[in-house]
Image (cartoon, rainbow, N blue to C red; front, top):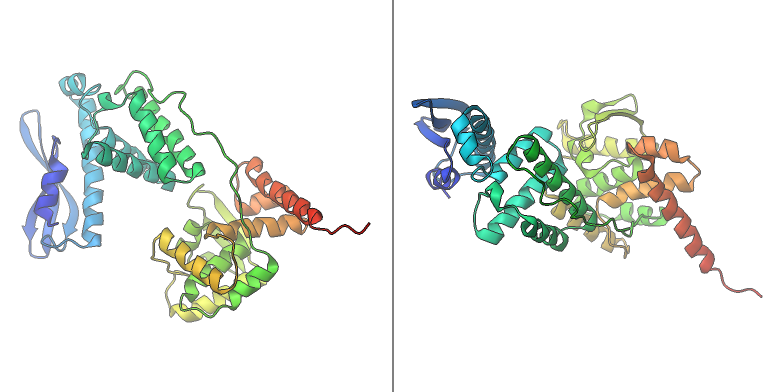
Length: 364
């Protein structure tokens, strides 16, 4: 879709419009709106390089412009008394509201929840907007069903909690009076947590594959317990004298970690493969694509377990506990804020021990 058609869709029902001015190198974006009966223009310093056939980079820039516009509209609601009185409870756009909130939070879970709200509304009513007064208890229950149908239990549970937080924030800002999602929960459910044994890791690492950087990234997670988000953004400049210094994407906590011999071997190989690129693994693929490649390598290694990138983190944690590392140290190495989260791995090791005892043949 070209830029002009995209702007028509984005500007529907909006008081502040995103406009494009032709320049030599493409189109320059600006906001166009009326304030106190005077026309206002706010240039965003965003440029669309290919307005006739937008690239993924152009679409990303347009999305950033949309967030700024939505933020400006919310500010506009608050500053214009008549507009607030007429629209807060009925005509304000909830989707625009959560886009701004998730952008400010800048955390994967908040951004993911905001995207699923958009997907749900688009599928339910073929619309890109949602007025606050359309959110009732039935809407919340249907959204809960959407999450449970399309996501893992833990992710769905996180998103319904964030959805409630969005609504509570809207109460604080006067858009709604009560939270229609109050009392609606997705119960916690223990999920099967896989991890790889020492022999499985050796088999996995011995596979000769064209997806070597994905293979190495997964093995690095097994050696360090890093999440996929942290592995993807890891740079060589964060490694100093066999130590890794980094800020976690999920928790924002700053961590310092001594790297094992195996982890350092992987980094040495990646430095040879990357030819000067500061990103250690440079994984540009989606999470689904990366997990697909990890499973393909595992299948070739003869591993029948259903694994994903996160299994590397499980493997690291269970290895430490199996080797007698105390739970508090494991919690610190994993960057957990709550020790209860780490205790799940201790229970997993205990369960595996019970399974091994059950396999001992009768000798009497």
